[in-house]
Every structure is written in C-alpha cells, then in structure tokens.
Image 1 (cartoon, rainbow, N blue to C red):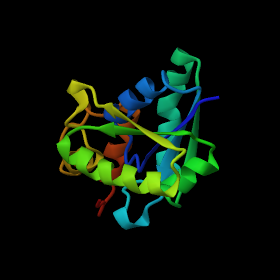
Image 2: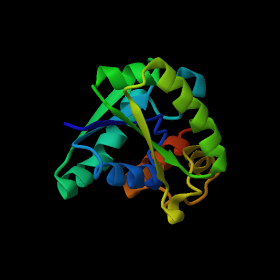
Image 3: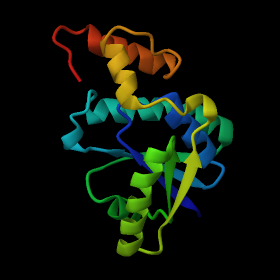
Image 4: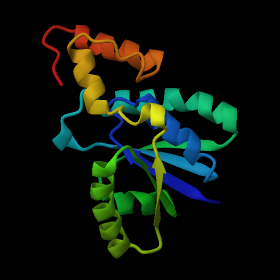
Length: 169
C-alpha cells in the first residue's frame, strides 16, 4: 500500500490545499493529512477546529476518488510523523520559487534523517498559486471577501472567528 503524508498547519484549509489533496490521491492508496500543532505559529483556529475542517473538506474527495484519507495531528519532526503513519512519501505543495528554496532545504534534512522516505512536490494549480492561509486570514480579519480562496464552510468559520469581539490572528 502506498501511503503519503501531506503535512501543514491548515490554518485554515484553503482551496489550494484541497487542490493538492485531490491530486495527491492519484499518487497514493492512503493519504494522511498531517495537521501540525506548531504552537510557534499561534494558529487562529484550535487543533480540534483545524482537524474538523480538514476532515469535512476531505469527505467529498474520498467520495469522488474512492481513496482513503486519514487526518492525523502531529507535533514531532516531520520525518518522525511520516514513520508514525508508515508513509513512504511526503507530499508538498509549491506555489512559488520562495516555497522551493525552503522545501529544498527541508528535503535535504529529511533525507539525511531517513533516506527511505521520498518527497514529492505538486505545483499548485495556476488559479490557486496566490492562495496562502496567512493572507486569507488577514483578508478575513480586515473584513474582506475570501470566498474565492476557501470553501463555503471555511468561509463561514472565518467570518464567525473574526466576528468575535477582540478576535486577532
């Protein structure tokens, strides 16, 4: 069984993430979506909220592809998370050259830690290349329309989050 791990903070999950998930399903039998806890980033949504959002968005993908998607929170090294779920492939999405420079370093470190785990890069669809969770949150926080970048459910969650008095991040 080919198992892939697609890691990220998914704060929130965007249409760019959904695109990569759909395309990664063609490469593996089971795709594990690794939701990183990463306390340093100060996520807008709790781990439980991010996991629930990713699970909800993946239901339609599973119905469409017939594949298997598992959502797995993790807080350890990426390569250890890959081992934990028996993934032989790490899936990473690329939007721009700046992403590649960072990812190139990450691949080198991961290969040094465990050369049996391959990293596969999927270029974001041209219509989705500008989408970044950080920018989506900023637009939503300032009252802008993010409906072009996220699903209706995530859009509603962002509106609810920023409608709360004193909402930040």
